Length: 421
Ligand code: EPU
Image (tube, rainbow, N blue to C red; front, top):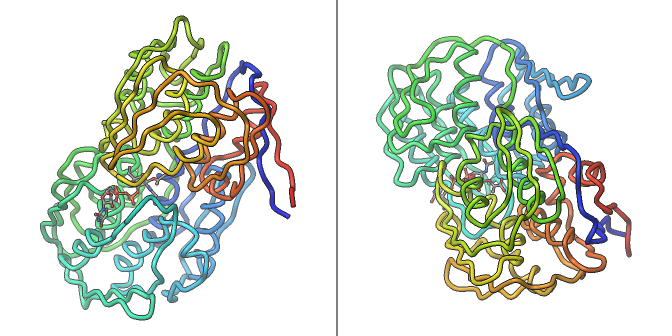
């Protein structure tokens, strides 16, 4: 038996959806919390499987974890110990690599398995390791395990060849207790990095420049517990905005920071989506006219997010004409296109690129969520397809979307989970 998501397409959506806390911030904030020497309360935790996996890893380390009612978590690392992280939960998500920076920062030594996560093509972690080495650590990899250790960590200048989100956050975490000043140059600028820096600063760290391409971290001797509220998930918000553009009469997407979504908003305006932008919400009124062609190039923030490339591809199948997509972050991130083709999409795949010829009628079929955002793309397609779409491997969707099925049901979608043979 396997649980699948089924969608009967063609039912227009309407109403309001409340966006949860950012998955990609959460998965870094939870490991960051162990750097404190007292309890850290984080509110706005999304109900996603990645959080459950991280909670398992916290327990492995002897960290006390309490899920309070609603979306609060209390992480108390007071009595934790530096155990090797070899539990299978490490391989369930990419972000388990944040324990590298956090444990190295706190104990000057970490032993852990290779992290897992969505397959989007090669996802090396050389820049994370280069950062740790620059602070004085040695890195050894044997029998599927990393052993990273240092006698002491000393602040240094680290230039990232690529503005990597993960490397920026991991180096920040390793550097908070290092002696002296660490400077990360060509740092990534994603809002999730600002969120993590903000938590660490509330704990007592001295981090400046998060959100720009130069971040400085002045090492401190102690970090305290604190309270932190996670930023809204810009990728979940973007997914619902795209779904609204594809399938809604009128839909309000609330609890968002519209500035985090500017590249998506401008693309949707370009193709003719009617929307009103407020301080913390966006209202989509579906299509006023036929959608105009557009081209998309994924780029680091504030450019068009690679995580929204798969969802918007489903929408672009409805545009009249040809839309070109250039994927510069993960050139192999096009598995969703093969699934969309099964549903009737006319997509030509190139090297790191795709051209979508439209508009095409989509038809429900049996498809597979090959990764998290592919899952979101297939849900979007299923909502506008004729007939029933059956999505398999939905554990990918559950890893990163908080109650996607429930939220869509509230908007009037005919969508459900079902066990099938
Ligand atoms: N890269 C390297 N070496 C490294 C690190 C990265 O070559 O040491 C390359 C990657 O291969 C990629 C580029 O640099 O081509 C950017 O990767 P980055 O490190 O920024 O990605 P990440 O931190 O592993 C996060 C998100 C991804 C999102 C990317 C890009 C988390 C947990 N994951 O991954 O989110 O696609 O940034 O914005 O924050 C998702 O949510 O579906 C997801 C995959």
